[in-house]
Amino acid sequence: MRFVKNENGNAAIFMLWLLGIVAIIFVITVNIIKVYVVKEQANLAVEQAALAGTAVLLDKTREAVNEFDTRPTVDPLYIADREVQKVTDSGKSVGDLIEEEKEKYLARGMDEGDAYIKAANKILPPRVNGHPFLKKELKNSLGLSTSDVPYLFSSAVLETIDQNQAKTEKTEVELSREDWRVEVKSVVQYESISDQKFITSFLSDIPQIGYGPTLTYLENVYN
Figure 1 (tube, rainbow, N blue to C red):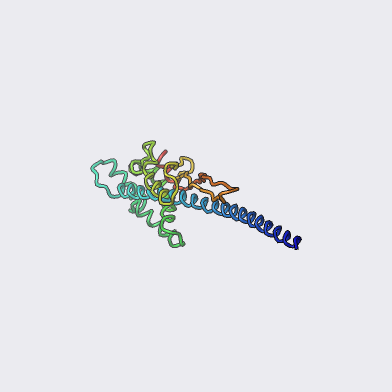
Figure 2 (cartoon, rainbow, N blue to C red):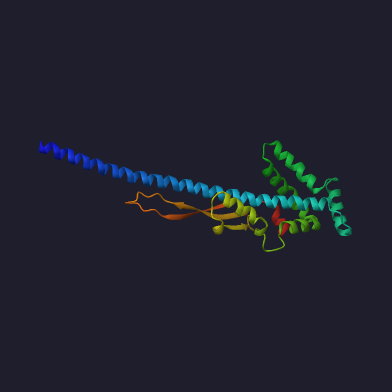
């Protein structure tokens, strides 16, 4: 009888030990999964923030093109530059040319934003190089005449970062002068899960970098 009781006791100790190991493995597994989830959250935050910054640049581009096409002016050089552009392009304004090209990309199934970017990247470079007043309008609207370009779209970037629960105070915003795109670096805080015994809880920042689409026409505006 004593032997049987001892066996029962050993089995109970073994089961407790086994449950402890299983609990530790469970906590480790949950932490690994949580790291991937937080990493995806950080990646989503910076990607969406970069797109938000790009959207601001595209809005400013449309405004500048519209200014060049329609703004009333008595400057004879400005008027001459605009008229030369229209004559060269068979009476079509720069905005008309971009919209016409955009429709071609939309017909191929591209979404509105990507279609406009493709069209602007194709239409603007030769016209920016050939028409100084168009270049001036774009440069002023996009803030490329100063060194503070990121401030133009930083509020949109930081708002998106905040909405995705990333850290605005650890966010860096840049307009790449090599790739001509909005680049955003930020972090999301990861808090580990603890079993309150063998695995302690800790906080860690998970960094990510997001890139907006390339706006190649900006190189012609800036240079």
